[in-house]
Length: 404
Figure 1 (cartoon, rainbow, N blue to C red):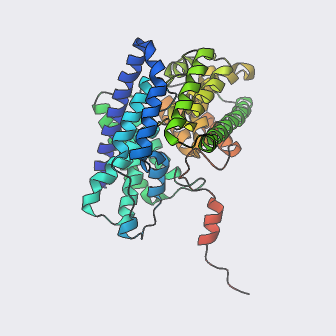
Figure 2 (tube, rainbow, N blue to C red; figure 1 turned 45 degrees about the vertical axis):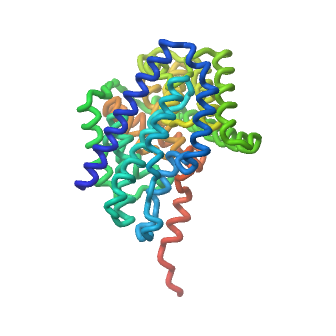
């Protein structure tokens, strides 16, 4: 537990530093509009750096998840390990991507920084494989919980994201300790996520409407996942030289910007703020945010998926509120959590996240929308390192039946 607290402090510090840097990058880009035209050159530089110097680091969050699933009895040669270069590479790459307007997120980068930093700092201590695995889970919990100010959701996310449909509770205590510590560190350094308490008046008709919202949220997650994997596959098949792939994504991003404007570049947080304030979003806003994001991430521009999916969810909920006669703030808040929960196979964590961000009144709405969205979404999520097929795992581990 003491080590988990240290891991949480490291994870929180990494999230704070990244977010401060990205805030500065976003402000600079908004004040200097011509920077977006440097995106193709930036994409080429990032693609070349990862291709020639960080092939393993380019596996991103999926690598952190994969290493956290290492067998407890792994040999020292196969002990969980995330390369040290991942942290500085993803930090710099995400900064450059945000500075030049790529529609990529930041929380996935925070997970990578935490996993890399913790793995590197603990390497000299030669901890057993099972303890290293627990500390990687704690690092993910700290990064997620500290990033959003949601310590309980951070702990559950780190447990839930490893295996779709199955939570392993042996790491719950260190994950919660790390997440709470990271939250205190980030808040102590001056960053906080204010909770907005939303009034909720539920009845059967509203619950049924929220279930319908969940269906649409799950379909949005399905579109995002399918499009992302399709673009990744097409870029690898059509462009043999890896450093050129992000350039194509950058040029496509600039073309989309020319057609639809700059609102969908970078994190697009003003769209979330508007939706949560009750301003009705247009139907094309979640569609365009998906398009901008899958083009950037699918072509290999480094970054995260979390914030873009939050934007998709918030604007989608706002769009659905009026035709369903729902409170637009309620629909936006619940769907914000549901789209990412469905895409990452973490519905419980994201339902808790909504409660921690928007108050206890959102418990039932968030649970309904998140669980229905998860049921509609595909088994394969956005993280390649995540294991799926929990039922098969349970059958494999069950004791043999006695013969009659």
